[in-house]
Length: 217
Image (cartoon, rainbow, N blue to C red; front, side, top):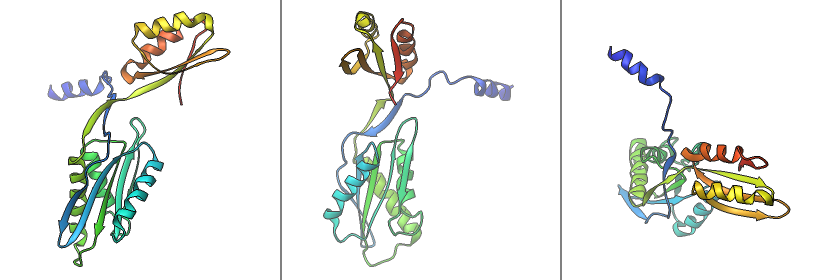
């Protein structure tokens, strides 16, 4: 009987698809972890693309001119996830993956974590390195303010001036957020809608004659 009950729930559709995510909104405070004279300086940064990663790494290097390793992991995206890990000369999977493991453990995205190492003269071994980089990433996350945000869908609504009142009435009724407007030969209004409300908003505009709504790629 218990097995049947479990299978029943597995067959149910996901009625409440997740439409929030956790991230940080500003860089963390610098933290420091020490192990057998090696020093690990730890940082977390909010990012939205790979260019942000390059900028933060370039800004860190002048601060740590004598450091031996700049190991990092990052992840960005909500519905489509992109991530990368970098051991920067440390033994394979001893730095980048332990850092990324903490990103996964804290369930955050749009984030870069960098752990900068100064070698202290004593080899830590692979196990010691894994612990140091994992701890460094954890310290960076603990020093960050983690916030929850909604996953939003961006739409563009296209229409003629004669349909302006119809469009604006729907926007007002549904309390939608306008992010941009272009009023030229025809009209374009850009809106951002929380994911769980996106289908409802789409259908409202799609049902209006001579009004077109599309997802912004």
